Image (cartoon, helix red, strand yellow):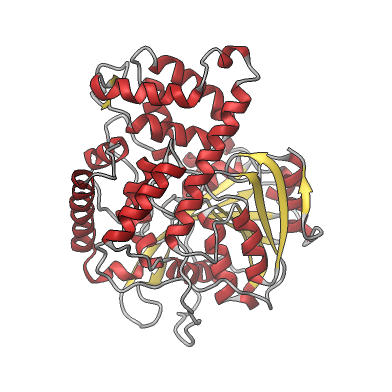
Amino acid sequence: MGRTGSRHAVVAGLALVLPLLGCQPSPQAIAWTDCSQLIPEGTEKFEVGCGTLAVPLDHGTAGKSLSLKLIRIRHRDQTSRIGSLVLNPGGPGVAGVEFAASFATRASETLLKRFDVIGFDPRGVGESAPIRCYDGPDLDRAFDVNDDMRTPAARATAESETRRVTDSCETRLGDTAEFFSTEATARDLDLVRSAVGDPKLTYAGFSYGAKLGATYAHLFPGNVRALVLDAPSFPLVDDTSTFERQVRGFEDAFDQFAKDCATRPSCAELGDLRALVANIIAQARTQPLTHENPDDRRRTSGGTVLFGTISALYDNTRWPVLEDALRLARQGDGTAFFDLADATTGRQHDGTYPNVFDASFVIGCNDGTAVLTDEQLITTTAKWTADFPLFGGYQARGLYGCRFWDVPRHPLAKPTAPTAPPSLVIGTVHDPATPYQGAVELTAALGSGVLLTWDGEGHTAYLRSPCVDRIVEDYLVNLAVPANGHRCAA
């Protein structure tokens, strides 16, 4: 899900979606007001403004609108300005305003002096008409559930909980529910482009953000200047198959972690890591792991151990943290696993969460088509439990996600854009969340994609590999396109 984790599958529909003609409103000017407090360490370097942009709730008809929250970050020494670089960090459900503020502190001076950095909270996310379906305790329970989904009792519980969350979403959103989708957000993105004064879009999207960028290229090929699509999911498979490939990706990533662990004496002493995780979970079922903070009353009977492990596998720089978490958990201390999970979900000390998972649920269901029959659920759960012994059973609960979603859907089109300028598609060989083959397949599907491969570990490549960074910067600034299939060493 981008640069944060999610138990919901990243979905990609296959039905044809055609651009709507004659429904785009007139361009708007954004009134920027100072919000330099969002980058407190950068006030001497940047002018930081926040604003809002009204977009149609339904791009197909005139009527109701909703307001998007935006941020513009402009280097005080900007020279030879090219335009705006619009960002999306992933999800669906990750807030773009906060991400853009962080991006500006990490990107190169060369890039920052040529572009305004634009972040926006997509519809339903952050401060842009935020979707709310879950309460904090709901999510605490959801991440920690690790029932045996092969049993009728576990399946009944999953169905009951899924129906409850679905009913909550549909009740709170009412007749607006269907309008929170990737296609609608891509149309919003074109209005953002127009509102910041760019005739063509320059964009960088990560994980789900790559899917959003590909959808934009499909809908508006003539409005593209440059698109960086880093760590895309699979564009040409059904929802369940995409989810399964992600589960396999995390299973493989754990093996990569174990292989690295064996080379370091401090970690090697932990022994067989798969057996260790199994033992920790078995122990936690009878004596739940606790948090060292006495004010944090959470307990885990095993699910948070698995979710925390998944969180650590997004980025190999977290592997030492996972090693420490396993060492502490042997002693009954689950603090490090809770902390790993919280770093990914954004859970606050007061038990509240950002609305990442609420938005991810609604947008994912609106984008997708899959609703499994009872027989398919049983068969798929059994297969995953056997094929992916560490994560398969735990993740199988997510198969129930959109089972009761009774809202008109807007399945995504195959993202073809043969007439668009070249898009730079980046795949990481050992990416657990969006496996590498997704980048290969998106490049082929677009018809205008150019594949860049990083032989590295973890989710996304830009700002993690100097080689990738140089190529991305040259592409964004100079429109220099590398040879298709170029590789950067780890």
